[in-house]
Length: 215
Image (cartoon, rainbow, N blue to C red; front, side, top):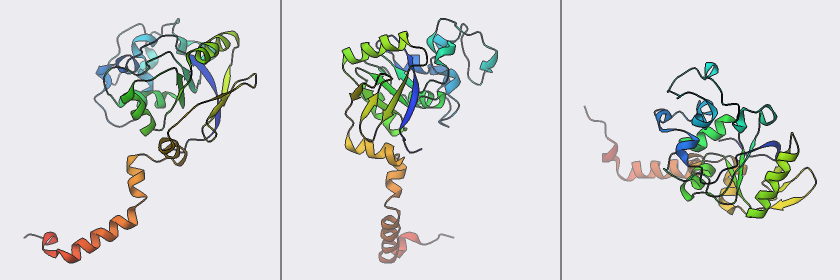
């Protein structure tokens, strides 16, 4: 997992509440567990005018011109602005994989579904919870200004708008440190690699019969 660094990213507004994980990445694309390659099918039902299939060449599919991520002004957006209860529905880890693979580094919303919230942080995606009125104000500002970008500072737990307004947010200390250090569950375990190896060696010496090779 990459270390999360401070960045300034264009904001794409997804103006709908209760966006579930099946809308984020439809069920037919869940066959792979490689974590990469899901970006082209992010919000597949909204982005394209036809029905998507696994391993399909999406470059030739007809795009929905009314969908926000297909509009040129939001090209290369790194921050997704959404409404309440984002990520509800089934507990598929493919949802944060698709968002991250598309290029999003942070998602801002008034609230998130619990399982999606945990999955997102474990996969390097920062979720920022703000008050409803703060989110509404951001939607208005994004609409009014093309190229609207936010300075996202996880270390100091704040975002800075183009007008210089500072919006502070809260993140659990453990999750924050994992993002800043680029540590997923495996990475956290490997921090104790020396201690693990030492235990294994002692275990082998005390109970050698457990490690005998059979003919």
